Image (cartoon, one colour):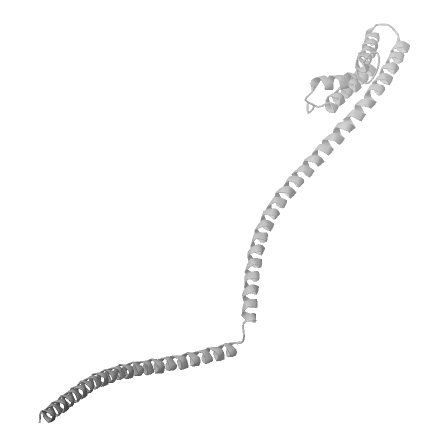
Length: 236
């Protein structure tokens, strides 16, 4: 094989390496990768890789002939290189797309990690805010209770007035107790006096009854004596 053929073969190997790099095993779908390699889904007619293989085979076969066919070898080499360039351009584009996709994937993973970190941080902040909210509710409830007590205290009269009212009430209670004691003593005295009066009335009644009996007896005796005297005078 001539030097020119070896150079072309080396360039072909480079292209194949680029093909393998452009369509790395990162892609799990072998069928899609194979179609992208052969470009059977984007072109009509014979696949470009097969055309390139035919050009290369024709060139190698022509080089291996022991004839002076430099013109044919040059023509076939030029056709192969042209076909190789045509085949290489989409590979370079595919390689660029793959690299861009890899960079985009890395960027997406970074964004994903950052988003997850922010989500976790947001969850922690939400929990912290919930605790603060509960504490704020409790503090507000305490403040409202204190405010209610303060209003109740403010609605009450001053302490001096309250003490004065208490003093007056105690004084009135003492006076009422004194009046009650005096009334009770007076009532007891009246009870005793009334009992004594009843006793005196009873004694007087008994005395009057005795005196009336004595008076009646005396009158009866006097009448009997008068009647006896009258009878005696009549007899004489």
